[in-house]
Length: 174
Image (cartoon, rainbow, N blue to C red):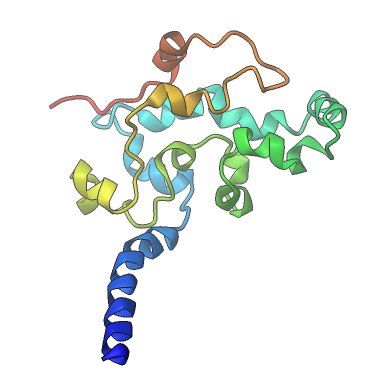
């Protein structure tokens, strides 16, 4: 009886852990992959909005002497190698370790690693995209202020509503 109980517990545990493991397997695909669909008028030229934003230049900002000076004052190494700088100028550790960190704060920084939801057949259905790992924001301001806050050594007043308008990239209706 003890063997059967243990086996059943292991099977149930495997099913509970499986979805989180599938999400953990999602890989970053980079902005070129996203741009294939998100650069069109039909998609609201979302890729161009990102390209024209400061987010697309976020990593490059770390390659300056000024950034290295700020990083050194904080006791860090070069800014482009400092995890404290990279977490906001690129994103999470997996994205930092990927081949796409030079893209700065890019699509997947906010929307999550895209390998599982990038297919057009998935992207046509928001619920399916979220099921496949695309981040669903319940509180966008909270997400943005994880970086845009007074803990940043270069912080300037952050007017969320005003700044959101600069990066808004909704899909046009119709």
